[in-house]
Image (cartoon, rainbow, N blue to C red):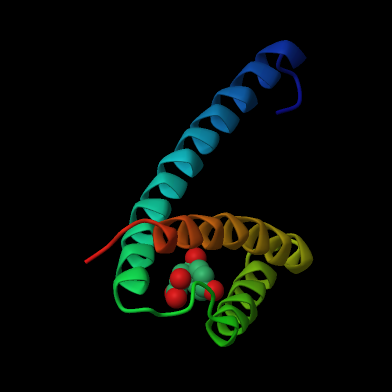
Amino acid sequence: MTDADPSTILQGLRGSIDNIDAALIFLLAERFRCTKQVGVLKAKHGMPASDPAREEQQIARLMRLAEDADLDPAFAEKWFNFVVAEVIRHHRTAAAQPHD
Ligand SMILES: O=C(O)C(=O)C[C@]1(C(=O)O)C=C[C@@H](O)C=C1
């Protein structure tokens, strides 16, 4: 990566960034497909939208994984909290719908 034209290098890196962003979108979509089913299950059985004990375990695990992957663990925690806030919003919406 030394002598190549910088704009060629940039183009190659951007290609990888675009592939990674696409994979992240697909993974997030799959995660929300699962959590929507969790929301319906919880709503049907009168279970609370959030489970703080489960979240604590998830955060501890993700922060360990982030450290191993050389990713800022505080960033991993922020990302998780951001996603879970949206999941809980979906769960509350599901609970407010009529269900049998
Ligand atoms: O596992 C659950 O009970 C969920 O509702 C899923 C989930 C998550 O997105 O991982 C979301 C909210 C809970 O507080 C904990 C975890």
